[in-house]
Every structure is written in structure tokens, then in C-alpha cells.
Image (cartoon, rainbow, N blue to C red; front, side, top):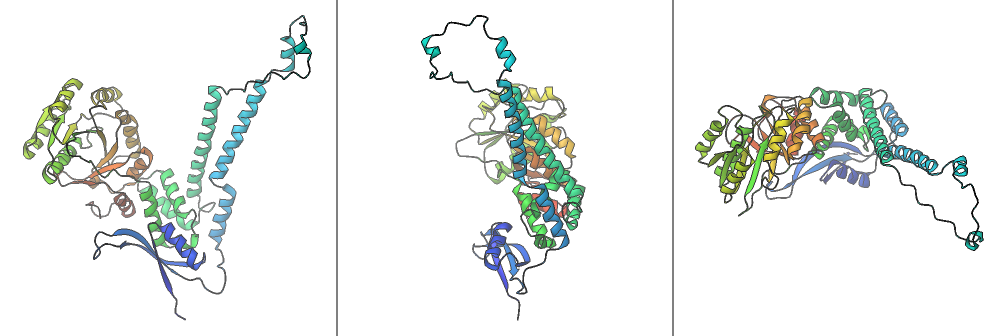
Length: 444
């Protein structure tokens, strides 16, 4: 009898997998998984969905679990899940609560010592045994006790993260051994150990190990998990009759001026917007002249400002424009004095967006320090430049996951205005999965 294959389509792999389980049962076998276009006209304007191909289970009976699967399930049962963490936090709460109760009650000898030397004369109300006792005021936790509870919770979560890394790096004791190379590959591509362990664990969690053991299934699930952790802005948005001021900030050498020129030319030439340029970079030699060259090529007005008062006057002069791009001076991410000086110029009442520009070829520690210190300027999104100067994008992904800021643009090369594009979660996944490939081009 020929084997029958069934296809299931959904927005995510998990939804397609659940459809398969409902129809064919948990013992069904996934044969293939791919991303297809659904709807639209002649293949255009359709939406991307996941298509899962599966076959019905063998009638011989239930599938026997493999040894790695038994080890993994035994480990999961021993370690537990988020419920274990919650129970641990509850236990700490009870310890603190009991301590508070003991502290609220003074010891017997203290009460005796505090009693008056002469017993006061009892009144009728006091002599009445039926009199209601004075209510006890609830004990209010001290501020340091609440802080300690928070610290204990953080310690529990940190221990859980460390355990996740240990499990990933000791596959024989936790994850099935065949998934260890996936973890090591992500770390070799520059990803932090925590981010790599979290990704691999997310791919396996809640899935049949026999299913994700298929290399294509694992890759599809990994790609989806990467995309879940990346948010994007869709780029700078303009509205008729509303001027928007956008400032580009970041450390020295990341390409703020070049990328500002790319964005300005793109909006002025390709979208027909009225664009003006302002520079506050009077530190670098010939920095204003460099931006003036770009402004002359595209025929855009430009002003040089030295302080917040001049910047306000420039923005007022360009009040009838659609977009005003503001170039800022680069500096060390550790020069907090210069960053605070720039913060005083970029008044939130005048600046609509602040884009933090980072280099994709930077090490993770450098990216972390840049984000930590430039967050003083209240950035609304990240722009990663120099994608053409690296082939390892693990550090970039780790920073995206840690920063909590969406992506706005990707930049590569020096061509104005061509070498800049809208950032997308799918491109981040593609760069990580292919480790950069032979070249970095537009998003697929």
C-alpha cells in the first residue's frame, strides 16, 4: 500500500505541527517543511506561510523512544520549567514573610520591661472582658526587604540562565548530543553563549526530538525562533504637513555622516520629500564640509550649529520641510561627558527620532558598552552599518536581543543612496543561518 502524504499550512511551524497532530496523531512523521506563498495573484502579493508535509503513523503501534530522547525527557522532568522558578521565588517570599512576622512581635521580656511600675486603675470598659481588642496594625515591609526579594528573584533567574548554558555545553547530561554542533556553530559565529543556548533550547522545547532531529526541520524552527526575537520599525515614516526631525548618533567610525546622506538622498530623490540637513559635528576637521558635499550633490539646504540654541533656530527655519536629518559628532562610547553634552542639545521636544548607529563588525563587548552609554540619548531604533565588512553576525543578533530596541535600517558600502535598506527579521535570520554567505546584498 502506497504511503499517503498530508500537507498542513499555517503562519508558524508550531501551528502547522498542531494541525498535523490533530489530524494524524502525535506519532505522525514530518517529511518536509518549507516556506511558501499563499494567496495573491499569480504568486504576487501573497503572504508567506509554513507548509509542513507529513505521513500517517505506522499501524504497527506506538513509536519506541530513542535513548537520547529518554535522557532529554528525564532531564526535563528533573530540572523543571518556569514553574520551578516560580516555586523557588515563592519559597523565598515565605522566608521573608516569616521573618517579618517574627520582627513584628516584641519578645516577652521586652513587653514586661515596658510595663508601667504602677498598675492603673481599671475602668468599667477595661474590666469588661467582652471588650473588643485593639486591632493590630499590619506590619509594613521595610524597603531593604523588598529590595532583597527582588535580588533573590534575579539570582534565581540568573542561575536558570547559567544552567541553560551548562546544559547546552554538556549535551550528554542534558540536550541530545546531536544538537550540540548547532549550539557550537552559533557561538563560533559570534553569538553570546546565553543567546545560543536560549535559541537551541527554544527549538527543542515542546517538540518531538525525532522531528527536530531532521536537519531541515531544525533549520526552519531555528529561523523562526531568530525572527521572533527581532523587531523592526519599518523605517522613518513621514506625514503630509508634519515636519519630522531625525538625529543619528553613535560612536566614532560607524558611518553616521555617510548613512545620513544615504537616507537624505533616498527620501529627497526617490520619495520626493522636502529634506534639509543640520550638523552639530564641529569636532572633526572638515566634518561640516563633508556633509556639505552631499548636500550640494542632491541640492539640499544645510546649516551648521554649535549649541542647542543654534539647533533650535535651525529647526525653526526648516519648519516647513518634511524631514530634517541631524548629524552629530562621534566619540568614544566611554566619554560620558561628551554624550551628556549631546543629550543637552537633542531636546525631546524638538527631536522626533534618535537612531543609534552601530557597526556590524564590532565585538559584542563593544556593542554592549555603546548601547549602555548612548541610551542616555533615548534612541528609538538601531541602524547597523558595515554589513559588508563581516561574515559573522552572531554579535549583532545578541545585541539586538539584549538591547530591547527595534531595527530601522541596514547599511553596507559607500554608495549614496543605494547601499542602505530597511531592516527585516528575515534578513537577520538569513545572515545568521548562512553566516553572511559570499556577499551581503538586499533582503531576499
